Image (cartoon, rainbow, N blue to C red):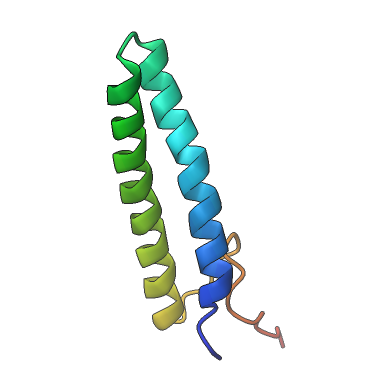
Length: 78
């Protein structure tokens, strides 16, 4: 089964945008400056999204089924 890079890339971008908004928004609401909040949001959004993508690739390579990921074909029960 080929690696679903396109699916993962879309998920990575969506997750990075959501995490950026979350992290930057929290920092801004805590009273930090806008520039700091944006830098913080970008940095941590990229870090967390990269960890997520690396985990997905590892699980796919090791053929570990993930109900949330749904990347592997379902095994038939006998």
